[in-house]
Length: 234
Image (tube, rainbow, N blue to C red; front, top):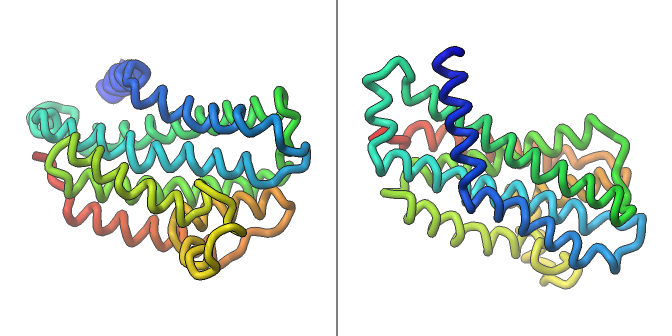
């Protein structure tokens, strides 16, 4: 087994034991089940909303907290003296956090499609494009938090402080139609709001808005560049 494979195995075990990982899966699943009994089979709102919640929790909470904690404990610095470079750890963590997000979303889709008989779109390409761009945008923000946070606790706090206003503007706490028009419009241009709206369009059988796809791509690229500039290994 290669060094990277061993590192991946160890990190996967640690991630599976992390309580935060369980919560990022259970919270959106609880919301889906709690409200799922009252939706119609053709509903295009609840499932996209819970998918966005799941990815947002991984990107804004789980990812930055893990990386900032590793830096705080000197793990990244110590890795620089071994064959496993710090960049390898970063790559492994991004892959594992993506797997966590995919697992949470796959579970939501499975429960929605079987237990709740909810509508699941058949358009694979638009769904994949929306998921990848939305996840990239949220992960980029998580990396920026990890880059500037002094420690894991700070990263956790900043992630939570960002998540709730972003979730509100994105329409994840109440239906967009019940929000003030100006706030709903601003929310569409946040990464989480663009993600939620794009998923909802896919569920409704509408082609994703190129503008919102561009918004997510811009966040992913620009925020990632900022994270790379400010990231510290120790």
